[in-house]
Image (cartoon, rainbow, N blue to C red; front, side, top):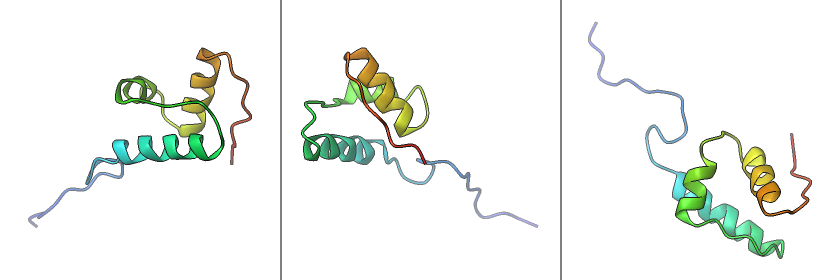
Length: 72
């Protein structure tokens, strides 16, 4: 049997979505009147840990902010 494709189940495998995610975070921060903005380098550093909640908590801690990040 010959395989024609090999797919992995990870975000970004088929298409890179990090920039879309970063922009979405920034849009949400703006809607919530937070003075946060993640530039490309900030987000690259935050990607070292998985999960948006963890990124928000880490960013808040580094900026002396208190947040209640939504956890499902």
